[in-house]
Amino acid sequence: MTRSHLVRMIEVQAAACGELGSPLYESLLTRVARDVRDGGVCAGALAGYEDAPGPDAVALRLLGGVHALVLTGRAPRLAQHYPSAGGDFSPERADELWAAFCGAVSDGMGEVRDWMTRPPQTNEVGRSTLLLAGALHAAARRRMPVRLFELGSSAGLNLLADRFRLTAPGFAWGPQDSPVALRDCWERPVPDWLISAAARTPALQVVERRGCDPDPVDPGTSEGALLLRAYLWPDQRERTARLAGALRLASEIPTQVARADADTFLADVRLQPGTLTVVWHSVMQQYVAEDAWARVERELDRLGAESGADVGFAHVAFEPRRVGDLHRFRLSVRVDGGAEEVLAEAHPHGLPARALTP
Image (cartoon, rainbow, N blue to C red; front, side, top):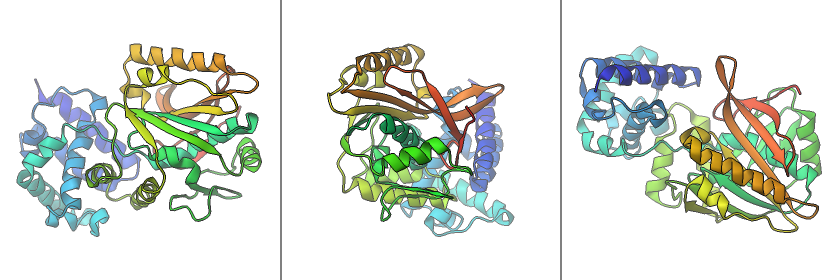
């Protein structure tokens, strides 16, 4: 095995962190890549992962393990640089940050190595901006109580999306006292179809909430909550606040997340008369093998074909799509057995969304 592939993957992740608004992680991963190339302490932490494919997100696993040390008080020097622990990131102190990071990796090597076995899970609450828009679009057509099913549900936090508050210039939806506030969630102009759908459906009547995940997280446990918090980027306070609010809701509203693959889970889903069954997912398709995803699509086609006058179905997806040479994260909706509509695109974390011209 060679380190060159791993170094390249870390460099790609460093650039992505910078583009997605985390200068702290961009700074750290730029140095992690050099350290791995030179055989430093981070090379030891990542030993055995040299040939891991990009979707394994090895760099984020390392960062998550170190962030967990910070959040549990076991890396006090590094905590001084992490806003999530009350610290402050300053590019002028990048050398101090790096020294503290290396010290945390060295001192907590056992914990970091254990963390490397855990796939990143943030249960990104901001993506509900798109998922809810798609569900409202479907609910405006099929005015029925909603049964909500999520593929790749992680901790099930987005199964609570109907309890979130969404606001943008000229637009608001959801309980005003919600602990989860998705502010400025749409760029101007908010699409007419969403404004109309929200007016017709000021509240979703969700009668069932179920999800699946190969490795579900229990948000009601300290370990589960730590995993979700550790995989957030420490200099992104709004994401931290959204997760905290969603964890509060999760303690009040029950959801069911089964340990199952998406195709197996969907095979047991049946439509129920008098309800709209919504199956949604966000940024998870890339982690599913092609043959398994083909089975998922067959099950989605089955559910669409089974819809009728008194029984509704909608498939809502927020997933990356190749557009030219780029990947764009786009909202697609299919109601009953109809054609797919691609309605919007957004930042990978869901905020802000932008309407697409038909």
